[in-house]
Image 1 (tube, rainbow over the protein chains, first blue to last red):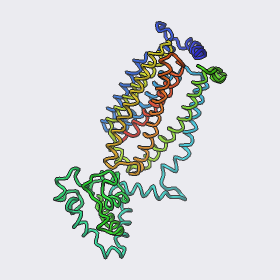
Image 2 (image 1 turned 90 degrees about the vertical axis):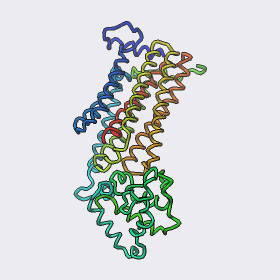
Image 3 (image 1 turned 60 degrees about the vertical axis):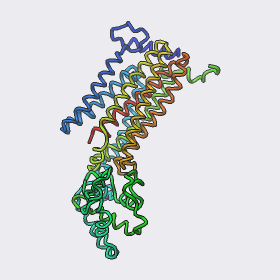
Image 4 (image 1 turned 135 degrees about the horizontal axis):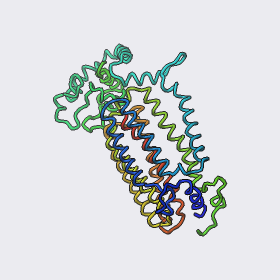
Amino acid sequence: MAEHHDGHGQLDTKSDKGHDAHHGDAHHINYKKIYFTLLALLAVSIIGPEFGIVWVTLVTAFGIALVKTQLVVNNFMHLKWEKRIMKWVLTTSLVLMGLMMAGVSVDILNHEGNNWENVAAQAAVERGLPGHEGELAVEEETEAEPVAAAFNAPQMFGLVCASCHGTAGDGTGPAGAALTPPPANFTDPAFWATRDRARIVTVIREGAPAVGGSPLMVGWSASFTPEQIEQLADHVMSLRPGQ
Amino acid sequence: MAFPKPQATLRSATGIPTGRLAVWWLLASEVVIFGGVLGSYLMFRLGHPEWADAAAVTNTYIGAINTFVLLTSSFTAVLAHQAAEKGDGKKAAGFLLLTIGGALTFLMIKSYEWTTEIMHGYTITSNGFWQFYYTAAGLHALHVIAGAIIMGIVAMDAYRGRELQRVELIGIYWHFVDVVWIFLFPLLYIAK
């Protein structure tokens, strides 16, 4: 405790802001004022993006985050009054982290270079963005496999799935109209934002509760072989918008 | 204290009290941990335009309420420090309790938010965005939990007028946890 006060005693002389009423209040900061400034900045950072203008969003979201950080670090953490060595330690840490990030950035931001290609990342972008041609080619190859002849997935979808999910897979089947939550709409890009093929396979096999979804979507592992489920999943994947 | 203090706690070669020096060193390493996660997220996000669809799902208002909760808890933490500076351990303990209340409120809101998202099928395996979402916010939540526990211990000592310098130390850590959230909020909730 003793050395603590000594440290502050030294620093106090440097940070004289004119009021001496609060004796023992180390840095004479009006914490309430800082707090309300932070809340005002929070409000701006929420309202800013509502305009939908990119640069306004960037400034209000990230610019204000920097201002808030500066307010907290200086006035709440009192780094402003800390010995210089600590500022150097923290800055060094930040700079080294930045250097590492800058070093790897070219490999992460780009998905291909002169002599390399990040196939997995490219595939992820293709899966995620509706209407990409590369994915269509893959689908066609799958459809063309000889096993597809024995079991007709689109036909089976029409028989089994369409009653709820609709013939077009848009979630408007007659039996599905009364269900809560409504049956999945496979033609909705928002639906696909968080789904991949593996998940579709799981839901067909084990039912939607296996991934936290509606218990009304039951599992079909008793009715279809794993291979047939794969083909049904292929058909569901082909219903995505732009396919 | 029943035991004599280790010599290092009473020594200060840098002119900074040893405890505070240790907290700053801890935070210097935290800068790399959180900076690394957030920096990686930012780079991946820029390389994956399709993540925008997933980001659109996060609830900006819940994120904003939690930002408000953490800013408020930072305010009470600094008031606890102010009370400790004046030697008022009981008042400092009171403000620390309010700060713990903030931490618990934050965690309750976060649990509600995550439960809703997981029930809607957005899990850590859904795609790259959700992996970063749960990793970054989860690591942050662990820091909130750790901070709340340590604050409880510091508050108990402070109430008895002991180790009042620790009120400032846990405060510095808590403000850092607040600062991390100040960046998580725009990264995960605002940038759609």
